[in-house]
Length: 389
Image (cartoon, rainbow, N blue to C red; front, side):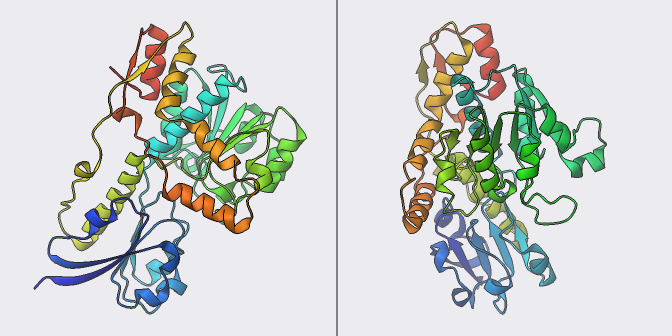
């Protein structure tokens, strides 16, 4: 008889039933729950726990349970008490890298929106990237290919690789027109990123724009609000917020908030599917079984080519394509419509929007046909990864 395996999983993990209901060599019993109902009491006979970011996986949740493997279908894992899990010999895994493409497409869409609204001029821009992991590195490559000057800040990498290609935070604050955050949340120590951008660092910033699509508490939101109020030329684009799912309404509805979105940068359909795939593969490695779940059987076929009428302005051509592939401004308008909601209503709106997020495909799955294609439009399209047909 196969070994019985009791699995509890967050209902908001994409494809959770198809991925985890059958595991070769095991009699898998999958219980799918809303995150708020994943408590210590329901884990008393659970072997495997699969979560997203709202479940705190720690001693309070797991002490005395038989859980021996926990995975989060998210890039971030600061909701996991990793030292405690390791001390208890509980294996754990995250989905780091799974949503890289989705987040980068979000940032590129945001940069194109800023260009369209004349807050920036591409490529006459110096961008400071704080955190040069998978996302920061890919973003840096694209920006350089667009002719943007890029400054990189990543103290752990600088210590390992040398300072030659990295800049200090002070240099970024002095020389960047725009700063974008792509760090994990580290609560203390030499590489602490909690409130990395705060009143002091924002006061020293000579540029005009701040983007955060990393972790909400890497940026002091009250300090950002004060910074926006200081100069009408200051602007921000935020996907991650302090106090999620109840972000500061005065901030997300601020007139200088260029884009406000409810933590959905990584929520392309392909990004969410990859989240699940990474968690599934990690579980298979833990169980020492060969993966059999075919993600492609559960994804829709590619859409028909998107037809784009072109002009003499290559940046306008690219914006016409990307804003239809990903109407970022619609996410922003939706979030900013919540400004008058009370606390509980705001939390529900934030959570429900993420849970029922409209389908958004990765750009390489979406063919684009320009009515005419000049060399500069072609070059930009290639740099950002559009699928031209």
